[in-house]
Amino acid sequence: MATAVDTENPLVEGLERLPVHPTALVIFGGTGDLAHRKLLPALYNLAHEGALPERFELIGVARRDQPDEDFQGMARQSIQRFSRTKPDPDVLEGLINDTRYVPGAFDDDNVYAQLIRTLDEFDERAGEQLDRVFYLSTAPQFFPVIAGKLGAAGLNRCETAHTRIVIEKPFGYDLESARRLNAEVLSVFDESQVFRIDHYLGKETVQNLMALRFANALFEPVWNRNFIDNVQITAAEDIGIGGRAGYYEGAGALRDLVQNHMMQLLALLTMEPPTAFEANRLRDEKLKVLEAIVPPAIADVPSMALRAQYGPGVVGGHRVPGYHEEEGVAPDSRTETYAALRLHVSNWRWSGVPFYLRTGKNLARKVTEIAVTLKPVPHLAFQSQGSVGVQANQIILTVQPDEGVTVSLGAKIPGPRVRIRPVNMEFRYGTSFLSESPEAYERLILDAMRGDATLFTRNDEIEALWGIIDPILTAWHEDTTSLIPEYESGSAGPAEADQLLDGDRKWRRL
Ligand code: NAP
Image (cartoon, rainbow, N blue to C red):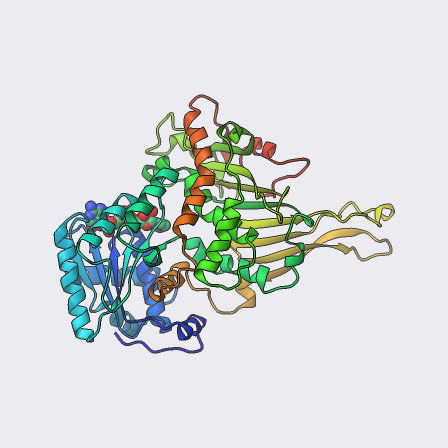
C-alpha cells in the first residue's frame, strides 16, 4: 500500500528522522474489543497522516473461522465507527483491501504455519523481507503461549529485517508472575525486540510532563524537597465497573491503575533529567527513581495504603448500585474499587516529600491529574492587611479531561488594601494547539514499528513497578477479616483516606 508523506504533520516530522521500514503487522486478537475500538482506528489515522511505511501489510489472527473478506468488513466498520477523523474512502480501502485473516486457536501450530505462508507471500511480492511486528492484543494468559509458538515456528527472527513483539497490559499479575512472563518472553525474544504497552505513555499530556520539566528553566530549580511540600496524583473515574466484573474482580484498583499508569506518572515526575530522549537513557532514569521507592514491609501497609469499595449513591444524576450489587461480583468480594497510598522516594532530591496517590471508581468526577504543592512562603508580610486567601503555590498537570497545566499564584485583590487571593495561570492543550492530539495508540504503534522503545516499559522497570505494589497486594490478600471501608458512589471517596495525609494536608477537591 502506498502512502503519501505529509511533511507538515508532527507525526511525520518524527518519521523523517527515523523512517519506518516496510512492515507487516500481525494483530493477535484482531477481532477483539481493543482492536475494534483502538488499534484499527489508530492504523487508519496513521495511514491518513501518511505516517505508515510505503509498504504496509496487516494480518488479523483470532479464533473464529471467517474468510479475509469478513475480517476486512469488520475492520472497515470499526474504523468508520471509532476513528477520530472521518474516514476518507480511498485511504480506508488502501489500508483494508488486502488485509488478511488467519483463523485458529493461539496454541494451534497450523496458525503459525499459515502465518509463515502469508508473511512469505508479502515478502515475495515486496521483493524484500518486511519488518514483522506481532501485536498481542489478547487475554494475558495467551502472552507466553503466543511468544512460545512464534519462537517454535522460527518467527522470532528474520534474516534481513526486524521482528518485534508488542505486549498489551497487564504484564503480570504480581511480581512473581511478571518475572515468569519476562523469563518466558525473553527466552524467545531479545529485550530489544519486546515492546510492553502502557498506553498512558503514548498520551500527549503524559509526554508533556517531560516537556514541562525539561524544556523550561522555570520548574527544575524548585523540583525538589527544598521547595515542594507534597505531590498528589489522582486518577478518579465517574463510572463503576459496568459489565466488567469478570476482569475487575480479579484485578482491583491497585492492579488496574496504580501499578502501571499512576506509577509511570510518578516516575516521569520524579526521575532525574535523562541525557537524551532515547529509550534506554530515559528508562534507566525511571528505573533509578522506582528503585528509590522502598517497598513497604507487610506490617506497615495499613499505615500507608487504604482500600475501599463503592456503595450505592448518585453519579451524574443517576442512582447507581454499590459494588456488591453489581452483576458478577461475589457477595463477599474484597476487591478494592478505591486505593490510596502514601509513598516516599528515598533519594537526595525527594527525601521527606510525601507522594499521595488515589484512584477510584464511581467518584464525584472523572479526572487524572498531578498536583504539585510548593512549600508556603517563609514570611508573610501582608498579615496585618488581612491575607486569609494566601495559599501555597500549586502546579496542576491535568492528564484528562481538559488536558493542560495550571499554576496557582497569590495575587492582590484590587482595592486600597493589600489583600491576597489565589488566581490561576492556565495552559490548555485544546486552545493552545489548534490541532487535535493523536490517540496514544497511534504514537505507540508507530514507535513499535520504528523500533523506538522510549515509551514502552522495560523488563527491569516492570519488575520494579510490581516490587513496590506486591507487598500491598500481599497484605490485602492476607487480611481476610478487617472491615473494608465503603464510600458513597458520587462522593470524593472514603473519609478514612484522610488518615494517610500528614499534618493538616487535605486531598484536593474532586
Ligand atoms: P477481547 O475483546 O476479549 O478479545 C480477545 C481476542 O482474542 C478476540 O479476537 C478473540 O477471538 C481472541 N481469542 C480469545 N481466545 C482465543 C483463542 N484461544 N485462540 C485464538 N483467539 C482467541 O479482549 P480485548 O478487550 O480486546 O483485550 C485484549 C488485550 O488488551 C487484553 O490483554 C486487555 O487487557 C488489553 N487491553 C484492552 C483494553 C480495551 O479497551 N479493550 C484496554 C487496555 C488494554 P474471537 O473474537 O474470534 O473469539
